[in-house]
Image (cartoon, rainbow, N blue to C red; front, side, top):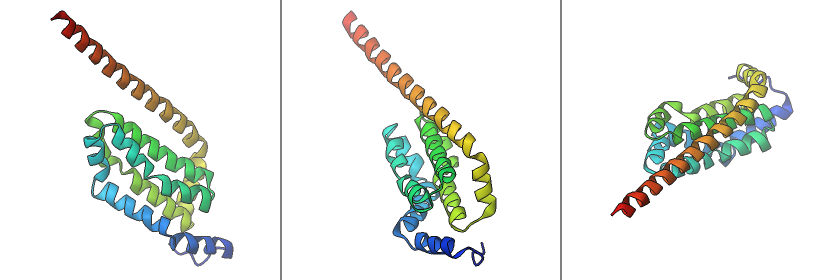
Length: 169
């Protein structure tokens, strides 16, 4: 993308963000988590906990979108991708399979890069979808809560069944 036509203030922000360790970190996270499939592997071997750990790796993306670029729509898009990744990962076994194809870190990296490079196509798409992204984030939070509640209930029922079964003998 040609960034020579950026206003001086935006050009200064672009240079500062692109030269930051945080921006380089986001590129590395996307490469390791999505290209080398660390995200679904961690999710498979650490069910539920792995999704929490991998969700924390979105903090650099959120830091750049909220504090450096100061874009609420971009932040909502990153949060949406993060929550969707968590929701998919919470689905036993199938979620880890689908997580291979989700590539939320690559999506977040592309969005972040588009905002930094002043890519009008990405910026206008995210700005246009901002309200829907906010609503979808709330829905995803509710679905994550319900899926977690259901998982806890199933584990409790299995435990109760085991205690009942042992009590028979």
